[in-house]
Length: 366
Picture 1 (cartoon, rainbow, N blue to C red):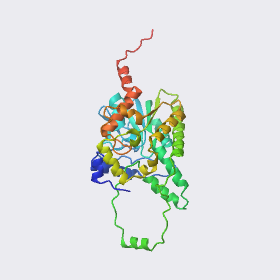
Picture 2: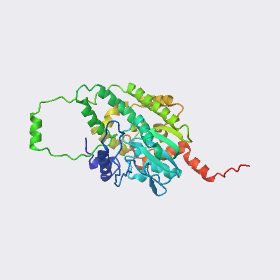
Picture 3: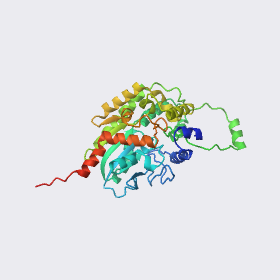
Picture 4: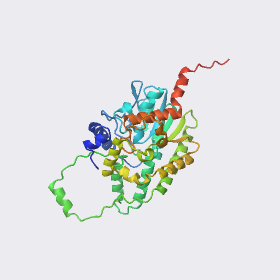
């Protein structure tokens, strides 16, 4: 894995200390086991990110922090579901994630039910795992899509891995699948005997297929869209008996979202192109805008009747759209997270709903 240096951190609009907080967090949480849903480090504490006893990130509402494990007595909660963008990787603190901004804008508690690297099916599994903790749920917003697409490339890679030891390499690769955040692993000097043993060992070809020659993305887009659509229909059936609204929002990808880039984002992309992450390499040949539109249309068709929106198109309605919003291709800085939350709030009428609930006079029955 590649170490982020001070220059890269500056280009992303974040401090080196903040980047190290996220890197250490992802390293500690990068442990997956069969039949166990991946979770982040539990009880993690830092200036940039903090998690509860379940590994879920805190959000803030009205001066108090809330999480899946610590609802704080809220009778009704709302859920923001997704991967690292929904979780707020790139935010300067827990107060500046999309979930926290949604809480601020609506006056209601929004919990972060998100985890780095989760695909659509795993997001649903996360909900099923913790459903008993939520009580009344008002809104569920699934801000997602890109992990499912990237992991379709992993499926193709694994299908081509014929080496008998490919499972070990799959595990190693999966543990490094952190959606574009490079992990800061200090180099450790090997002992003389380790170097000698490696020099004398018979040469073996690398059993892990290259990521640089992936087939075209068309079939992957179809499979990923169908998977997302099926999962959204499952969400809809699960929530049908309550008074919960369900919305899917395709998360933004920088090449899908912008035609022209602010100077800081252009410099950031140039740096990332020199040191691409595994996530960038997995999704890299799906950057075409036409593929993006086909991807979203198929999701929307497959997810019927679940309302689906495309943040790649909606974000341009933000008055700060021309500002520096992206920390990398799919994560946002504080201003970007705030812009996302405001667009979501406006699109779903959440601020208006809050106003109506506060001002509306109760109807008296005679």
